[in-house]
Length: 451
Image (tube, rainbow, N blue to C red; front, side, top):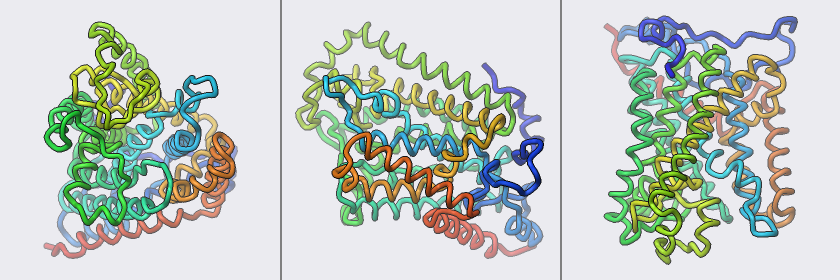
């Protein structure tokens, strides 16, 4: 299936279009119809690529901010609530089955979060028109500044007592890697992202025994400021052996950046994302099951998990969670599609579910945007809300427990997100990230001499 109306000549002519207000809505009334609480996180791009002269610099600095797509924010809000659920609700039910929260959200919520990170980066660096020249250097500086803020927040949040594998430091490193690719167009990003999803796990499988010993033992440590004292171990965990290894998760970000280069305000594009994503989400697990069946399935894997992994119930582990560094005792591990396993089948399937969710949210956002206001409010300040969630998860989980704790966190995120959005404000950590982004961009633009 080809992307609708996105030939090279067409893509270069598409202008970013603001999401229109529904007919009949008075001008300026009710901010709930369009997510305006933070525009594009402090990064705006001029209509045309700036040259090296002073006029181009002033144009880049004064470029108007574009309104956020409510569907993107709503999908991000859903990812946040899904991650909260997997952190707070038990993997299993009283009868030993898999809980519905894990069935629905495990692996998919964090993948959606990562794909949308790529979408956001593309939207904030030119949308359908990637930056060039001076603007590209400024955009990269802004992305690196944002990466530093997100990673720094992640290290501090890692000090909180609890049992959550905090994603933020990995997320910051993913941003830093993504800075290399912000100048690419849709087709290149799509091809690179698709290849990364398939090849990245194979490369990781080859590298892990070299850095983690027999079996490719995973790193479960949550990064904190103390981790900086052991930089080699920290980087090894972040790139290769951690729960969200950058070596494989970069594929999510690249696919998201490709999607962000599409004209997402168009219904045909949203429909294409929904259909293509749903197909991948269905085909990948079926292909995994067929491949495992041909290889002997669980019989091949039984007893292949090293003791250091702590896997005592393999069928349950395969249904609920295996960290991104799957065992290296046999190549058959790459055939599973277990949540967080970061195998080709897992990456393709969860990328598909992320694209389908985004497409659906964009379509709903066009038809009845007000219905997405609760999710969009939370989705516009995920850095702040995720950090608060991690810090408060242990005490609220101990007091409320399970689904009650999840409902409390979800309700708090929605209420706070809506309040901040309706006040026309950013979340506090989002404001810090936006300020750092603007400062980094401005530093590049201002120190370049005019001709």
